[in-house]
Amino acid sequence: MSSQIRASHILISPSDDATTQINDLKTQIEGGASFADLAKEHSACPSSAQGGDLGHFGPGAMVPSFDQAAFALEVGQLSDVVETQFGLHLIQRTE
Image (cartoon, rainbow, N blue to C red; front, side):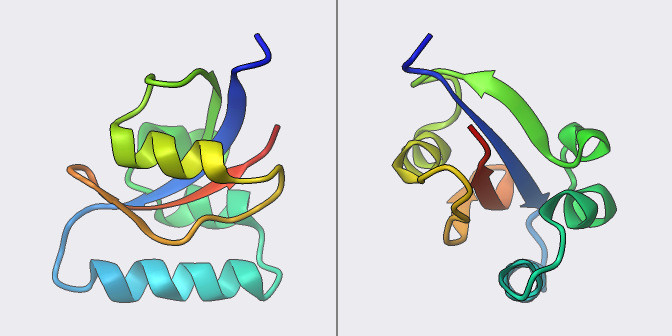
């Protein structure tokens, strides 16, 4: 169980202004805005209903770029923008 982490994310679907949107959200979070509130409002993932919470997962459960970024974070830390085939993500490790 110790190899599992818990994380939340915000997903912005691929679009012309996805980069602008995700960078704006990152700025808001770094400025003290609630990650969960922004996830509920902006994330394109079904996890948005839980404030972006993905629950606990182990290595290999997510696509490689997401996995690598999530496991590199310290608890409470916000990732840089992560690009996957699903779009652009901000990841916050919660446990």
